[in-house]
Length: 80
Image (tube, rainbow, N blue to C red; front, side, top):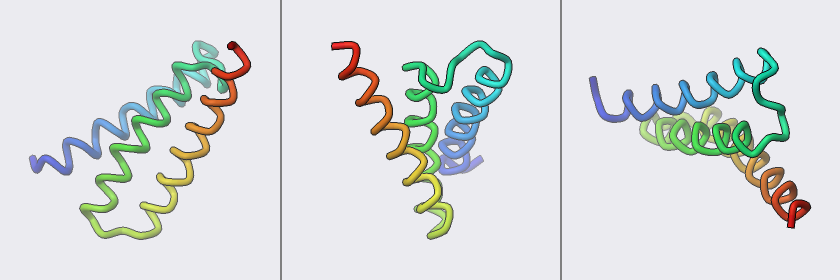
């Protein structure tokens, strides 16, 4: 298995893991852990999308990851 595939698979597992935990009621959509899983999953999948030269996938993961990062920063600032 190529290293890019391993990186993409890890990103996928982080994103889907957070999503499944959210659906199961284990992680709230505004929890630090959920947003962190999204950020790192998107980071890895963005790298994978670049390796594939897939612009739509790059945009999707980039926007998803940045949105999660912005929300995480807002939550952490509120906590002080």
